[in-house]
Image (cartoon, rainbow, N blue to C red; front, side, top):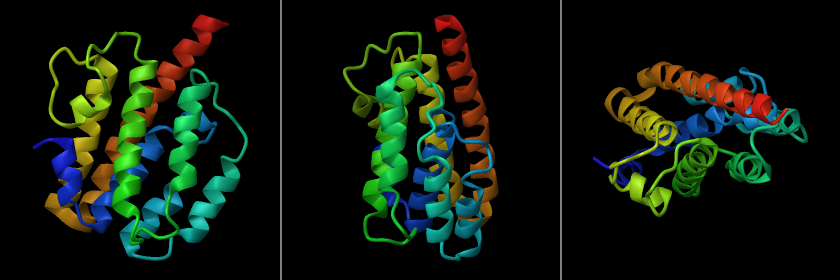
Length: 184
């Protein structure tokens, strides 16, 4: 099943986890530490209000850029954070999750040293995986995995989804670090 189809079929918790996981993987671009979004993950797990955790994360990630790879990747990550709904069951959660998916794939495409011959990330999201660059392929797999975990396990899949996101954040942090060393 394509990523677009998985997003279309996901419930509110799956959508919130999907968007949050994309944002979580891109936190290094905003200069954030690994724990900045943990309160949001905890809110998803226990069903509590995540608005306070969201505001705290926005404050923590307010101005510090992570030196990721240019203004465009940082702007895409910032938009994911700024567009996050005040509640994981808000009417716009599907739109946010979809936007986070696109933004995260674009970020990975921009940071991948290997060229991606697809005309856009939409091709990848719809299932076109031929000659996909490694960083984009890994991000696409992570997005699919998070949605499948939540669809198959509900709230019990959140812990594993967080693990998938943590792995992706480490990969992106390494890419960002490598690029910074190459420029310095």
